[in-house]
Image (tube, rainbow, N blue to C red; front, side):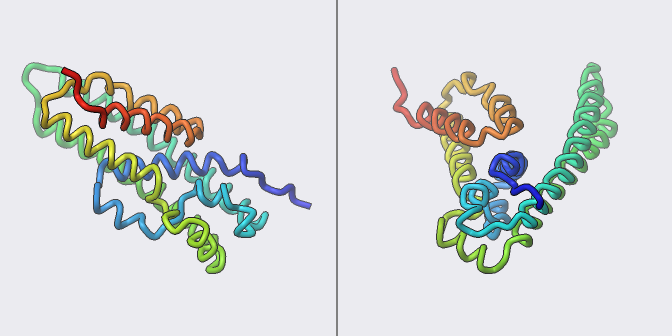
Length: 211
């Protein structure tokens, strides 16, 4: 008998998809919200896998899809780091070759698009793996449980608060390490901790300015 896939086996799936949702929301704004609205949050699926009757075959398929996507995205991220270093070198001289810089930047943007394609494809696989009854059950369990719920809402709230701070000329230096902290937690699959970081950040951003 094939061992039953546990909740922990699917935790990396949350990390990859949630990282995609955060990145997509931060970059695309409202257009991203519309695009991901029809998908289900990986975190919601893992939390309710027993209630929706997720089968061992389905869980195994999702795990395989994650591993394939993870390998693809990891390779692209390494490639993007290399190309980013090249761009940094091109920007160092006092006189910068505009054509070379734009060409190199286009390479990085192309890689970013491939990463988003790979991660979006994973969200599609997740939804297509679920039966109509399972999808209906997920909607019952959480009417706001689509992929855009939770993290996406908080990211948008952070963006709006940061814009208010910028308009007011307030110092944002204390948030300089926020992205690095979130990226590190995402890589470890610590979604709850990411929520805590976003909550903490929102509390600071929304607090009255002290004179």
